[in-house]
Structure formats: structure tokens, C-alpha cells
Length: 181
Image 1 (tube, rainbow, N blue to C red):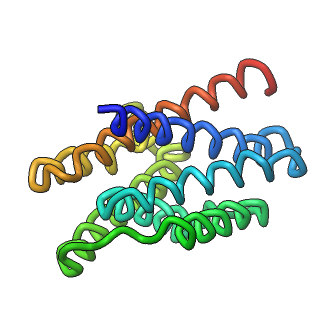
Image 2 (cartoon, rainbow, N blue to C red):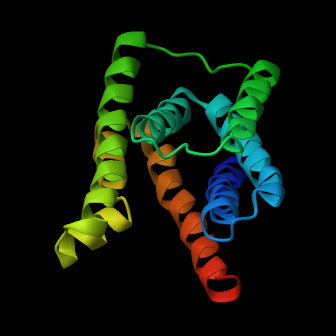
């Protein structure tokens, strides 16, 4: 039980630190201070990715979705990728029990993640109120994650984790808008 609580806390902190770093870059034009939260986010991502094959698939799909959509648009994000690699080198990559199923899972999650990222951009410009709300909160990946956990119960913590990650992300965004923008 404690391991699950720690895992979900790390998901929340990963979302929070990522959003703080992103907002320091995009909303506040302060690239210098963004290095620390983005590095910390990378450490947290690496920890989660090393935890289980399920967390690894989820977080790799998110990283691929963000990369494919062009959202990694500042060199400061590179420190996060470096920290992920360092943590994975130290802790190791989790054992993948069935590589073919894992790749299929990764592909499904990647498509959901990429759709969320592109849908978020589309909804900002053209979307209806419902579409804007759906993509603003990137619900495609969250819903797909819950559906996947019905097939593979081992994925449930990761599926809950993405909701908690986004909670941390949203809290950071609201605090940024309230106090700094």
C-alpha cells in the first residue's frame, strides 16, 4: 500500500515539476530557473519508468507523443531527458514480460497521447466547447489508460497515475496563472 501511495505521489510531483518548468519557459520567459524543475521532473519520470513495464510504456508513450507533436521546443527540456537516462542507468529498465504485447500497448498509448497533443492544439483554435474541454484536459490518454487496465490489471496503477500526474500539472498551472502571469 505504501508503494502505491509513493508511486502516485511521484506521478503528481512529476506533473507539477514539468508544468512549473514549462511555464517558466513559455509563460514567464525565465529560462534560467526552468532547468531545476525540468531536471527534477526528469528524475521523477526516470524513477517511474524504472518501476514497472506498465509505467515505462505509459511514460514512453507520453514522451513520444510530446516529441511527435513538436511540444519539446526549448533546449532546457534536454536536461529532463538526460536525467531520465541517468536514472534508468542507475535503477535499470524493468523486465518486459511479453515484448509484442508491450509494443502493442506502447503503440496504443502513443496514438492516444499524440491525439491528445494535436487535439489540444486544434481545440484551442477551432474546437467546440466540448472538444476544447476534452482535449484541454487530454482525456484521450486517460480514458484509454482506464480501458487498458480492464484488459491488463497490472496497468491500473499507471492508469491512475496519469490522472494524478495531470492533477499535479493542473495545480501547477493554476498557481502559475494566479501568482505569476
